Image (cartoon, rainbow, N blue to C red; front, side, top):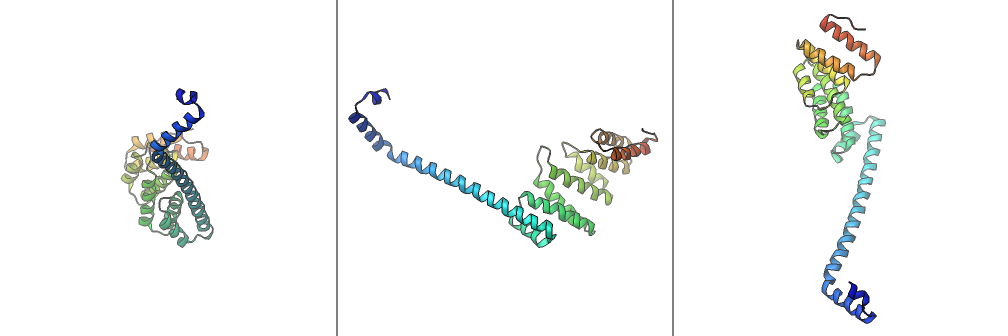
Length: 208
């Protein structure tokens, strides 16, 4: 490189020409690759933004109209989007209220599978909480406990539901532990009073 800068203008031009002749195809390929990468990235970002806007608009229409046809459009066209899971959660609630427990369970299981991450995930928490309530309503107490055993982090509501299932199975010690953990993670005074009543019923004790 030092020879290049110390050379005369004519010599520099000759060096550049020689370099070009030797590596021109490699240089052209590199330039084309860079242009293709930039263009592909811009297209991907543009397409993703357009898809997100379209899905969000469809979901807004679904909420406003409560039309399942719009919900099906989201599920069919964007099955892996977060809005599809929002639709599934809502439809699971409607199915349960219409006494279609099996449909609700299937929808909630899909949401759980779609959000089965190691870290805390609000969608998975919502789906597991609703599924546990259905299991309790159907007296599937073992299913409730099994559902929460696979969770790395439980909310106060989850601990309480787990305690309810354990209580129904006659597992008083386990139920008391679950209720105590629910108390530790609960900030609502009304809920804490209810949990204390459940503990009192278990042990025959009175809690302040």
